[in-house]
Amino acid sequence: MQFTAAQIAMLINGKTEGDPAVAVTSFGKIEEAQPGQISFLANPKYEEFLYTTKASVLIVNENLETRQPLSATLIRVPDAYSAFATLLTKYQELMTQQLTGIQQPSYIADTAVLGENVFVGAFVYLGDKVRLGNNVKIFPGCVIGNNVIIGDNSILHAGVKIYHDCVIGSQVTIHAGAVVGGDGFGFAPQADGAYKKIPQIGNVVIEDFVEIGANTTIDRATIGSTVIRTGVKLDNLIQVGHNVEIGEHTVIAALTGISGSTKLGKNVMIGGQVGIVGHISIADGTKIAGQSGISKTIREPNRSFIGSPAMDTTIALRNQVVARNLPELEKRIQDLEKLVEQLLSERINA
Image (cartoon, rainbow, N blue to C red; front, side):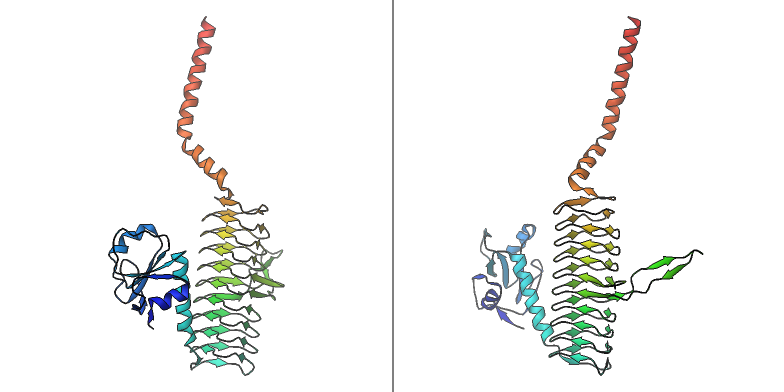
């Protein structure tokens, strides 16, 4: 596809500086871009490439001050990073909208209902009473169980598995290999030391505008629903246990595990490799640093935590400063002890 700088500026509400008629057909990194490509500058660390890049069009912050003439046409916007993300999103939408139809071989149950402009890739399985909204894209190798509902404009990439009775909202993106609705980890210990499986008869409900990373797993509820609220963003390789609820616009980085029945509030931010025990609550706006372990309910909103077991970040950083000074403090204590012994000895001998 080919777009002019003027057309792109209209898409992202920017102002052109240079030749508005210059055309681009693809994207490139600012340090590697070639003529006919568009790039952006948001991080000051890359500003040196502003004067050497071969890109035809650059998206930059509106307050950027240039030190010398540029060969590229600029599009000035309030936030270059956000504007570039918007442009990539629109480009991706245009590309996926072109995909329609049903590839073969695939299996679609007679009772399944498909909306308009749906794409079903090869080797896809759609079970009984599946309902797909308009513009849904199901890429090859996906398995959609009985009674699953998927809303408008959602995308399931290759190899996604959605177990029976789960509900996926609109504008949801699920990346390759993710599993939604597998059994929760529920086993009752028996007198003889064995474990009896507890049937998991609930489902998973994923609301609108959610993105789920590759190979992430979201377990179905024992009873009721595991719920992922609107706008949640989950990275790759995350484990969400049964009956967990994740609040609106929460973001979670890779390798995090959330145990069953834990409730996360809105706008929570969780770093990578975080472990969260079950049956606790985490308040709105909580920030948890990577590799932290959360073992207790967090009731006060908008606080930051770090460490395992996790503690308030301010306290944890203060403790780190103290820990670094321990060798010096030990030496000072030893010197004081010697001084005290000397003074006592002098007093006794006086």
